[in-house]
Length: 310
Image (cartoon, rainbow, N blue to C red; front, side, top):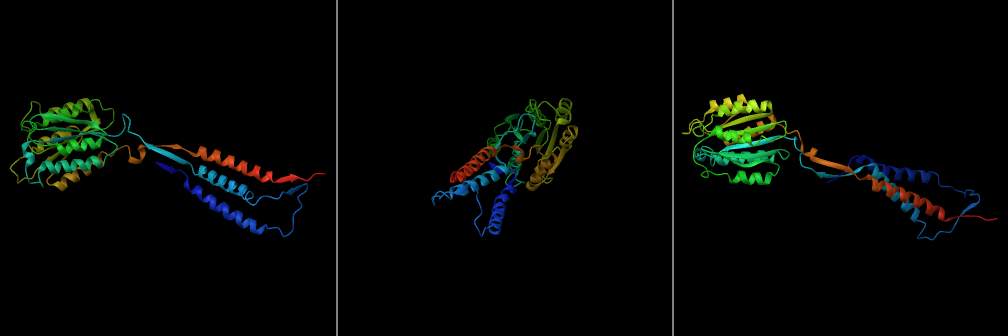
């Protein structure tokens, strides 16, 4: 990726050309000026235009150098930059409920994919859970691979049930070695904690003790009141409150998209996309070439002058 750091400098070239044209018209001599001991040598027609061509080429190169051409390349965020996020997705049997179109799980995956696409500078991972948790992908910048994992998340690969506490614990463990100052867990659930050996609130308190304000848990409750599956909103609210996060109640697929938009604004990335480009100046070759051609044009101009002898 290339750019001109000071592109208005390019306007100097047409300005110089216009000034030279105007000055040459006003200063056209009607009589031959005295040249002293110097006289113009007859110049071949194909050579007399060379000094002006070199001069204007030199000026063009110097103007480009003044505009500061730069070459940029994309770099990956270093440790400690950006936000590390783990999406913790419920894949229990109740996620097949069709109160969302087509199912709760499909709606949750679509919203997660949109969220991932909108945060290219942050490391994002995936944990799925049913009666048992499973870490699918650690926080990574390889969002293409992560998106494939999200798309393939399905029901039936884990024993059925809802182990919210275990899923939360695995997600927090995946952030243990994170060096960023801000870490986030997005916990999605549509049921009650009915499996696992650890309470979600106990895990939340442990997260608060170990990580303080650096790790927040945003909980997302999926499901409608009319559906036969109940959501433990009270527990999800407690988990979010203990860790400094927030509970979102998503009653429709659109609500899910809005949830991720809200989290996106609450946890704005510290690395805007344009900030991931490193630019290096490339004006030196243009400057050197312009100066060389400038000197050469002067040398050629004087080459066609001679001293009138005695």
